[in-house]
Length: 600
Ligand code: ADP
Ligand code: ZN
Image (cartoon, rainbow, N blue to C red; front, side):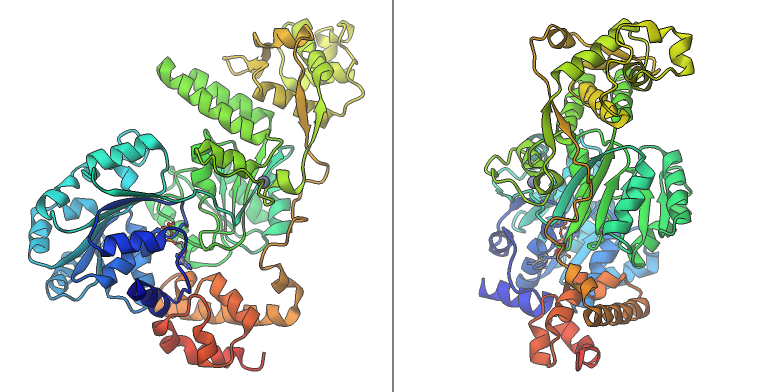
């Protein structure tokens, strides 16, 4: 393992292994099979890249994502590792050149698309080349039930049949047991060791707020906590993606849209801009994100409710892959609950599937309405029961909501719906409760019902939060025709009879959580000299990235630049100690950097 650590330091420029990396590397370098489950950003790539450099021959990495292959190879070139890729983006002549170089032992790593790997031509090439290992990235693509299913992945079992002595490492960020079993079965990994790391992402701060006006709340959030940062904003519909992107742009945020309804060319361009330029906010449907390994996404925002905790965790996991502070933000309101429930009810799916979907949505709603640490809930959902200390880095920990006895208020809300015939939505019911004589109230004669004006003591917003929670908790159900009418669920009977107490959460007045422990880089914005140096380093990085035709983070991560600002090394020896500065980058950029850092 000395060797592995030397490679980590010299080539990758990192000081220490993270989590299970060292164990996995020693296992694979020793020639054995394994399956690695690590969250996004956990550091899966090093688990096969280092053994690839330790073992004789070339490591063949199977990856379904062309963009990801390009970036990985570009990043490897930046640190002087001999790597290439083979996929449909290459011309025939280019592919032939790579194949030729493969046979002459020019590569330590070769990234290959699965359909290409399975061709007789490539299998024959591999038979004539010493092979270090097979890495099967995004291994959950073998799962027919998952949304990333790739039929070619099933055929990858041929690798073991044809090359039984070459070790295989399969990797995924999908944690559930069903998928795990499928991977083992379909890839023939029965004897393989399983490495499961914690799925916690401690650098991500979770924040879920009551939606009042989603777009302007989002803008406030971006301006207050992530001005100039790269981020992803998820919306449910294409229309909302377009509208939100245009609106943000109008407000001075550098926002661009992405959804499956746009032409392939524009989608590609926008994705490329997001990867290469700094500080772009991508407004997208969930069609965007898979295979985007941009490490410096500083926030992921949801303007609409995802369908499940799995979806939420996968999407929010795209923030902060570089380990630096990042935020997962969501605004959620009554309309979201009603909409998602209706989508399930109206879907064509079999009852069995509707039931699963409803259960998953309920788990997510419980997370939204949580009065205890959100991170713990997430981890428990993924069966990480060992976690039991509140995190101190979610909105609930930083700014605990007040829990109050809402039994009487709930009774008022439920009986108001009952007295008005269970045909109205929350807005009208709130008018009745608050005694607003709107046109509609008069039209239906609701100023005469017994619940008229019995809720004057609470503000409209508070009532909205009450209705939202009653729907989330399942006491109200919404009508299936989609008029937004609220009907009483069977369970509401006990509440109306006074047999059940209802605890509700009150969102703290002040919804920003930046009061919490400062994000690691806050010091930079405080000290003008540091800020100046930071800007100069970023400008230098942008130039280099342009010249090399790679995204800026491939040259150096933000984490590395921040450490440079913090310790301001003045000699090559000092510079070499900075995380992210390996031998090759030292040779390439050492002089430049010392020049910039001198006398700071
Ligand atoms: P994953 O594929 O699991 O999402 P990556 O392999 O892309 O994660 O790693 C995430 C980021 O963390 C990368 O930018 C990588 O360079 C960095 N990283 C990985 N391992 C280490 C380590 N031991 N020390 C410092 N940074 C690391
Ligand atoms: Zn917490």
